[in-house]
Image 1 (cartoon, rainbow, N blue to C red):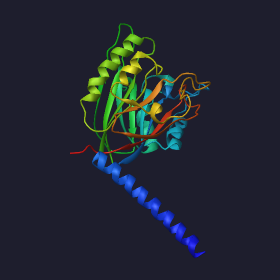
Image 2: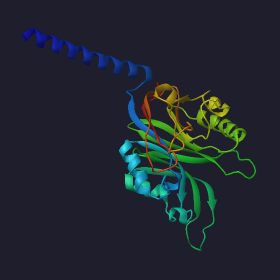
Image 3: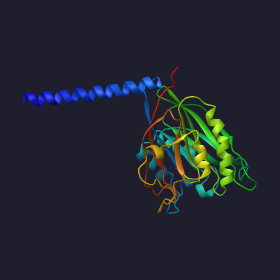
Image 4: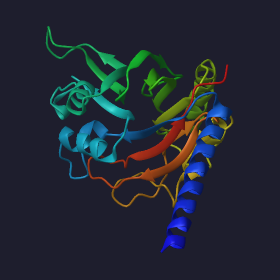
Length: 279
């Protein structure tokens, strides 16, 4: 019994020392202890699910159950039309989930009736952590196509400032998507420290536009996902077109696609570790 206890204590000591060594090594390499954060990307299809039912509560449930700290949302209505009951969907979700929010209006139209809010359609970023600043940049657009944008939010994750980007690329023109990616690259490169990019990129991993984006950012699914990672369509998914990308200094621990009927896309969650840059 005494020997058994000694072995038990010895094993425990080794595990503790290993944990301390690993943590110390990570802190030394990055300049500060890492902060774990769960990031998700979700094209919510203005909260219309696979059953064609509008249900923001169902979207909120997916985000809540998934435990996301930061979420990039695409296809978000803001007083847009009766299809979403003229709701400010980003504000509603932020209040329901008790999260901070910023919204990028890529379409911005006059209201249907005088005195009503402007009709907007675009992307949003939700965050459990404070958002320090943000901006939305319009991306290249070909004639007759929908305006797309790149939404950026600087998020303070327990002392580590993370640049979070969110986008939704053109769905029916590969050349336009490539131009949009080329516009995104310098915008991302202009910021120091950890970078996370979420989005519905409307292209499979082997597409030139995804390969171009991979020149400067890393695909979390390629680093830590298991399986095909298909996200679209939600019923019988057969394409991986939704992504979480990061800068090379971000550790990726896991990437998971979650089953859901809340949208025509499935959400992707990624568990990351972010650290302050070394001085």
